Length: 452
Image (cartoon, rainbow, N blue to C red; front, side, top):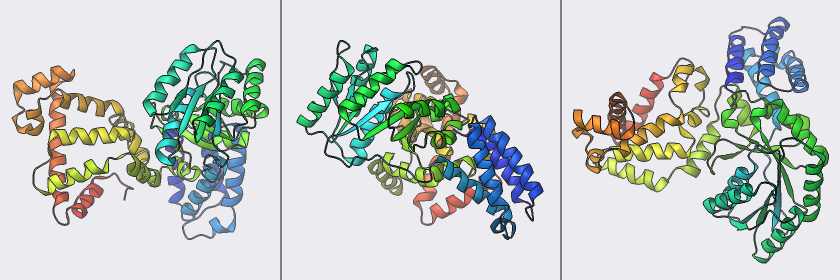
């Protein structure tokens, strides 16, 4: 998300950083570029106006004009205003009520409500240690009930069975009774969506809301609909007492306009964002960290948290001990590293959070998509156990067999083997005393200008 906005803003601000002093003239030119960047990112016009007016007022203030590094001071102003527009702080779910805490999910058809229910259930169970039940009130799309049943099984949440012949209000009430009886901490209620907002839909969801009195009413919206996402959220907010918004499909939205518009137009906080299809792909929305990403400064805090939550530390320790004993880094170990990487959204997901990655060319970025990692895992899966443990035996005929078995080319196999050799050498250096420091110096030396 935000690729196009990041490219435009980071380029514009980079020019300003080099200025010895900031004047009204170069501020005007920069703000013109910023305005165009925001409009191209599909940010709502009232939001663009408020943002540029606030930045202009602060940038022409004495704090920036008299600063020894006015360019950097201007970047701080832009970052602060981006954060303000998106809500300033990360707002968590409010579950402070007599259990079960009821969460009602609303939104249009295709926004990703059902998947978000499963993602939220998984997060509440694993990170908040909550006992969670889910239920579907979508009686118009029987497949939605089956989908939620399947997803609840995947994430280990209790599923309350509903039927297309029942009334949504009756389903919601019965599910709440069952959640109380089985001592659930949280009940998440999935509702029907429509292709557009209509009176029947709004009347129905209002009735469900009145029947179960949820403590959280979350509006799920597809970020790829741009400023329309904010307008739809606003329409729902007029009918329902929304407590927050969940932005979905942010991994597929290069513009990011919805994230910048939703908070100001609805007055409701963005609480989560969906960053992929997997049930683990739901992140809390931190306005300050998102502002940092937009300006090409990365999001190291989120990256550290992700590593702590998703990396299998026992396996990592086991690998470290193996290398320290001089047993080497084989292709089975490399495959495990790729699998761990996939848990964190692949290479592209990691790059999005690393500072300065906006400087990389599109050619480089295109080579680190999720498919690249999938291809490398497929190549390793086509090898025999012996070949994985002893990569040196992989020569001509074996390479052809592995390439055919994985549906790849021989040069792809060669590339993987070369990567393994490089990683193996790096692992050996890390295992030696002082190796990590030396390795970091080497990595720093290979980074593009402006890194480190």
